[in-house]
Image (cartoon, rainbow, N blue to C red):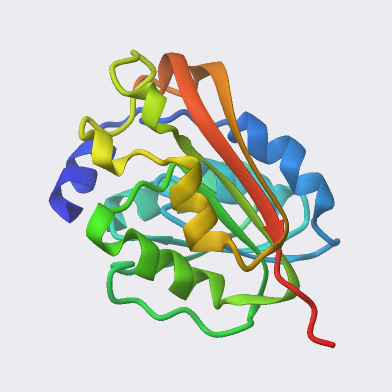
Amino acid sequence: MREFWDQRYAAPEYAYGTTPNRFLTTAAAVLPAHADVLLPGDGEGRNGVWLTQQGHRVLSVDQSQTGLDKARHLAEQQGVTIDTLCADLASWQPPPAAFDALVLIFLHLPPAQRHDIHRRLLGALRPGGRLILEGFERGHFGLPGGGPRDIDWLFTTEDLRRDFGGLEDLRIEPVETVLDEGPFHHGAARVIRCTGRMPVAR
């Protein structure tokens, strides 16, 4: 998979544009000021750069160094600095309880590994930390808006409830929308949005 993403990000243009995901820009309103944000699968950095511009401290993680190089270039263009880490999420262990937010934007994982990776990433949240997720819902299969070509890689409400069911205020919402996020996310789409909060220990 690393080779696939290196090839996709090798072009001079940004595969998913340079503006942030629209849902993220609204969902991030719940974050505390100067939050520590973990952003796995940030690719070329459009979301990590935007969060940094809002005053947050971001760690952008991706398996493609090519993508992360473009992320740092985008950050420099925008006058900010982001921290990046090249790592394979199948084996990477994030520091426990180190982040105020976990942001997963169109991070689609191999079905056999998805639950374990999600649970490991969730462990990086501090008590009260927030999850913000948007991805393609199973009903998106066959629509033109982009995304994985294997239906098993797409999300169902049951998938997300199983992976993140321990969160408080868990909200899972399928939405029909039109994407305009660079050449690879463009057109009619059916997405699923998920937010929640890590319980605060009593």
